Amino acid sequence: MAAEADGLLKRVLVPILLPEKCYDQIFVQWDLLHVPCLKILLSKGLGLGIVAGSLLVKLPQVFKLLRAKSSEGLSYQSIMLELVALTGTMVYSITRNFPFSSWGEALFLMLQTITIAFLVLHYRGQTVKGVAFLVCYALSLLVLLSPLTPVAVVTLLQAFNMPAVVVGRLLQAATNYRNGHTGQLSAITVFLLFGGSLARIFTSIQETGDLLMAGTFIVSSLCNGLIAAQLLYYWNAKAPHRKKKEQ
Image 1 (cartoon, rainbow, N blue to C red):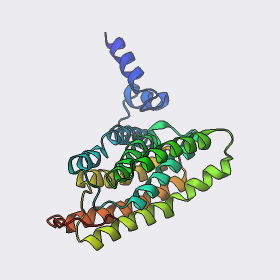
Image 2: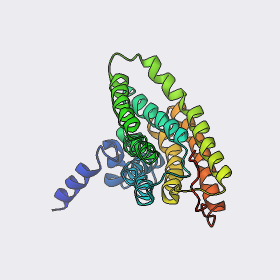
Image 3: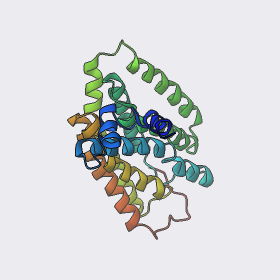
C-alpha cells in the first residue's frame, strides 16, 4: 500500500514539479533541506500557479468593460504595446523550447488582452476595425510561429519587450494622471499583474537562466507597480459624469 502511494506521488510530481533525482533526494532520502531541489520545487510551483492564475487575471477587466459599456480611462496604445510584449515573450519561449511553466501565462494573458483591445474599439464605435484587428493579429502570430521567421527576428521581438512595456505603462499612467482618475481600469487585474511579474523574476532565472527574460520581468514589475500605486492614489476619485473623449 505504501509502495502504491509512493508510486502515485512520484507520477504526480515527476517531472511536473521535480526531476526524478530531486524526488529521490527529498522523498526517498528525506533530505528536506536540499536547497537546489527546493528552489526547483518553488520555481515550478510558482510558475504553474502563475499560469493557472493567468486564466482569470484579466477577466475582471473584461467584465468591468462589459458592465460599463465604456472603455473610458483605458489607453488603447498601452493595450497594444502590452500585446506586443506578451506576443514576443510567447513566441520567444516557444522558439527556445522553454518549459510551459516559465511562460504559459503569456498565452492566456494574450487571449484576454486581444479581447480587451477589441472591446475598447467596439465601445468607441469601431467594431469593424476591431474585427480586422483580430484577423490581422491571428495571421501575424501564425507567421511568427512558422519556420519562415528567422530566430534573430524572434530574439529582436523579445528584446523590444522592455521598451514596449515601459512606453505602454507610461501611456496608461499619463492617461490616469491627465484624467485624475483610473476610469474603467480594474484594480484586481492591475494588482494580480504586479504580483505575477514579481514572481516571474525568480521563475525565469531559475527555469530558463535567460537574462533577457528576467530583465523583461524586472522592468514589467516596476511599471506594473507604478500603475498599482496610481490606483491606490486615485482610489476615491470618480470619473466625471460628462462624457469625455477617451484616450
